[in-house]
Image (cartoon, rainbow over all chains, first blue to last red):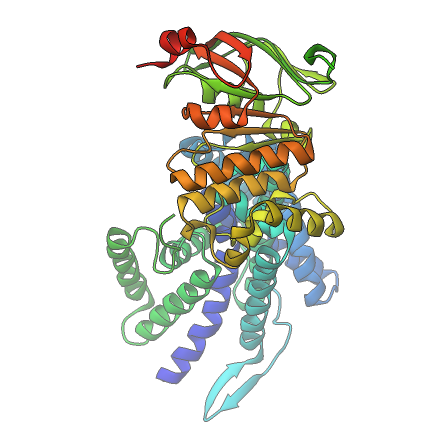
Length: 283
Length: 240
């Protein structure tokens, strides 16, 4: 049973990592707490439901979910967020309003009922009597691939260098011929697109609902807080830690009790390591 | 050729600026022409750094205009000004602590193509050879003097048409100060790069500059050309 819980935890870690990646990009690099992050995950989920129902293959649906959520993110940044840079309270309020608008729009378009699609790959791998659904393996693979591509963009391209420069010193970056407003828009769209990928991958494993954003928002931010605000590696480690913790503990106590214990531990962590377990020192 | 005949680099026209409704720059006008190395002098808090920030587009103007080369501007951002060819070495250096020395330098020329980047990179290291052995170290672990050299080298990477330097000797040991003065003079000689230098260290300022402007209460109180300041200007505006 313990092995089964650990393996389940890995696929949850994949989902959690995907959900948190966009938040790490937007919060870690731009310092914005985007309360509409969960609704961008929902946008990705419904995009995959919509295109999958048109017979589009799952892999293409994931890409379309990225594009759709990125375009929605782009519009949010241009119309709302860019007016409130450096104003934490206003950003929180504005992004909360956007979250409500997105959730209610999804309700109007898709109705209040839950929607889902079958997993892209059916069947399970059986190892020593433990069943591992192939889709769970796919989730972990997509999460690792997405995390690697994000890392490569941030650490191996000029664009990534600009994004990281802004996160260190916006004013100086602007003084070095970088149009920081354009980079901000791109970064926000990228983070939103990554949330869309999370939504696409979540849907076959769970369900899409118009108000699903709230719970994924919480999960994403817990992952970011535990891992460190600006660390991709931290987000991965944190996703694995949290998922394994709740999955294994959930085998002994109820899932709700496991989550409560997790939240209590996160509060203790914030007290002693407010920048997370894997944050860069001295920033 | 007289100064008036030389090409105009920058003209500040009656500019003013404020912090939180408190006027810091008050009707400043001056010109900078090709070949000029202007030292902005004055006691602490008279507005020298703010004036440099106004020129760079970091602090918005309340009034007046600045002409850069052939473009006259009243509202502008740091991105626009840097794109015109103005490079800035800020007080405190502001190098990217998480980037390596190589990344800091390359970021200075982030808009260049690969060929130009390589050429400028080698040029920057020729001016500051001490940086060569630190290329793979993080900028944040360098000494103050090394960081200052890196900040100037980064500014030169873009091939600027005007260099602004804010207290480049602050917190730097004397032998490095002398070295920086020599390098700035060499840069000016070889690249014909006009400079505006905010400085408290008068000896350094006049080792580099060929013109001076002394500020008092957000305005220019005295200005002139030459290798040293008249005694009465020092007594009136610079002695504490």
